[in-house]
Image 1 (cartoon, rainbow, N blue to C red):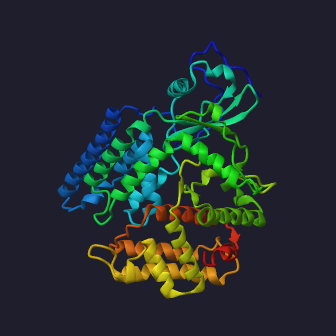
Image 2 (image 1 turned 120 degrees about the horizontal axis):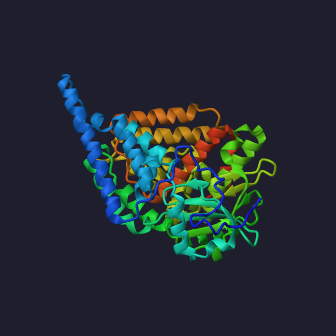
Image 3 (image 1 turned 30 degrees about the horizontal axis):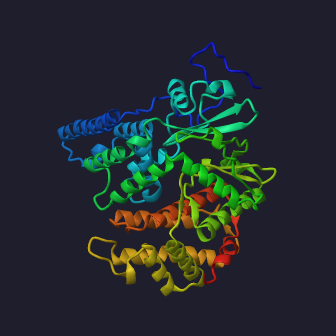
Length: 467
């Protein structure tokens, strides 16, 4: 039931009905000025270093010789780092998300756990700050156009939060509101956070953080461009117009600005709720999502690269899947698409020589198995190739792969951890490859969560012929 706005309450926005995405989220103002954001990063560094110094003195007094990383990664420092990155949002949070998705097996376990929490948690703006942002975007009289506007967000992420609302013309809307100050502080945030991570020695010496810093900076500049996201929202709707199993929310340009993105509200349930659905529903859901991922890679050359589970909703009765959040959409270089096709053909045909060449072209190993000084060792490259071969051997022989069986994934994770403990230096692969791998990993994790059985070999078959 809806009601008219109460204009007698100056702080009124709407009914406080929708809970934030996680119970840990809370209303905290986003620091929007560059100086205040720099101060928060500096304060975080000082607090981490101070805690480490105190811990070191205590350990030495007890006759111990602690390692610096052990002093830095105390539970207290871990909590502070997570809290501050979540509070700042923007580049600080995005960098943590990128590093945790692409390099979780290569970072210290404690840091990986901290950063992985940032994929699911973000504080949200208090109502007063939210209204200031919307007044600036729409003008102060905007509330008269709404029957309701839920002040608590349905979701909060690194650069914005999403609210449910209803216009007087009847349209049910999901409205993404960008955090103030995020766009203009991207470059300084990335540079300052990179200095913090290097100075605190939280990142291993062999891990090159520079590409992640640059990618976080570039991606954030794209993601704060809500006009760009609106175009991709419309593009994907057009691409999937003949695919009734998918739904893309309608884009509302009349209520969208550079700081606000408005679209139709989708009432379907979170995809993780499908865990209790019948087996055939879970199987069909993952078959459709994996088929879409392959189309994005090999047909569209355009990929929504964020595999966050929150970006998918589903209707158990119709089997329809709602696709959300196109801020991380990126065109893929034709060369990378061709290289993935070559890798797929070689792997599914069991051609070891062609597989090695394709993996080298993608940057996963060095050409001809030869590593330059300071790069991945030759024996590590052979083990990486063996991992890739093992995956293709399974896919080539299994008519339908059961993702409820964790054995293959556990073997891959165990080998990855073993390589990391031996000091393997990860290759400098193109960013397009990292984002494809991230999307692929997200689909595998979701299929495992749902316990789905997917005819992967049949899905791959149309792309095995020479392009």
